[in-house]
Image (cartoon, rainbow, N blue to C red; front, side, top):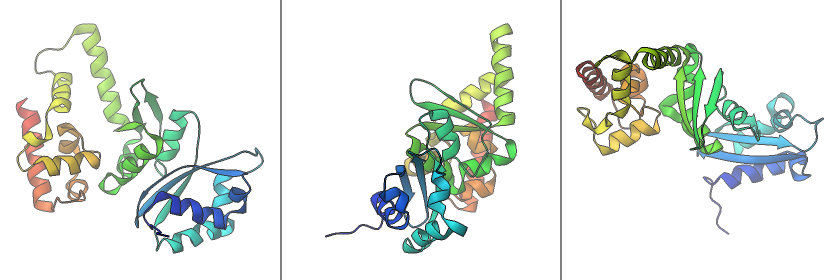
Length: 239
């Protein structure tokens, strides 16, 4: 028998051992995603309306979940309520960040709006929170701050009513979204992939990010982050 400590099923089996309600079928593990050794997200639900699925898995004073955490050598576990409504599920999956609203389309794209002070929390260190939430829910998650979404909405209304002059704000924003990251100075294919995996998928997002956020991306140090951000800002200014 070969046991993999990185497989999501290990987390499921550990919870089954610690939570009798799971073994009895009263609480169900609906989805699990992990960055093994660092963090996991576990979505649970219940077949009994009188049972709090998340609270049951957490246990009294966190006793049950902490037992699982110790077995995984300190891997942080986010327990959240599963929902058949994708908008609700995505909101739960991005915890601990607060979500204002979620819109979805038929191509499995989800736009998530969060308060300005929750943007970094929603994305997470090295994009981890957003990445795990996307994998857990199966949706392509695009996270925006409330002020960014408000500016975009106003620009779209102006475009619809009056059109946009060449080089206008909304045109610049659209160009920023279409520019390829590998066109930035200091960004090769591997770095571009790392940036996208960390939720920095557009030139505009890179230009608006802090140096601390960029330097937390795997393979990007402080000097490279400063170089990339400068290149992104210059590209937007010249577009």
